[in-house]
Length: 420
Image (cartoon, rainbow, N blue to C red):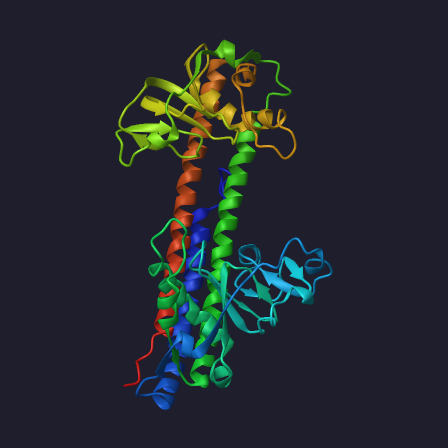
């Protein structure tokens, strides 16, 4: 931590980069040379390629009938959905939901086979290490008996990253995203010698573990920075023990509280003016209705609050606060970002979508310290906000760079000369 109390981003990121690059170099020098020796020895003239439907049995996932309770009680067979991948990763042995044996059509899908999303969230796959079922979003790929001894399941798992890319490039052009399954069947897999496969898997396991460590570490750093920002913001905007503030409602503070007049479908690409809606980020539009300094509050209660000065337009469910009386507008902006969502939640029933009405907004109470104190708070929080955004951008760029580097090595390892 440096003198200002901030975590030292440069040292952290630099250490991560140096560590990863050193290990990448070690792997490339030692493991790659070993792999080259194996390829030159075992398959110097190239490797055979086979179409997907020649190598693999294709089975569709399905959802057992929800109306039959016996299918879903005391289940022992894992039933995989996209949520399992989101929460558990892409090599899975446990699922979030289980079904009973009576729910199985024909037989379960065998262990060490693959599921790949061919509808909706296309471009995602997983290796399942236990007997299982999967829902209809997935196509299940099962090695045919005569090829079982010719493949390491982990090699197929890694090669399916290429299949993910193929699926994304070969979708039907319709409102419902789905893969062209006739083209899907023609995707080709290489069949390098098993010893070569195992060496590639060993290298990619090392790469994968390293990349995962870095990719987990960077989001953790981003989270830590957000918490650090929130800590300082909370201290600055906590007036519970202060006697040097007065309290006013937004009706008293704002000379004008109105709403936008446009529907969200009026947004266009590359418009000349900002268009504020209930989404976190504004869109663009080619017409404006306001030319002022304003705070924009999302009416659906999701906490999106923006500050803007100039010409802009707003969606009809967005509140526009302007013409401020005896208050620093940026101070009000920071205070609303901190406190308004908590206020809205007190009006919402459990399980309902939060929202804010005009009377709720008008009656919101704001503590108002001396103008000099408001300016001091604004200067600090503006600097923190800018710094936080810059740090997050740098960390996200580094995360993207690391992933691209890993994908480059993975692609290099999985590219083979085709046997003529």
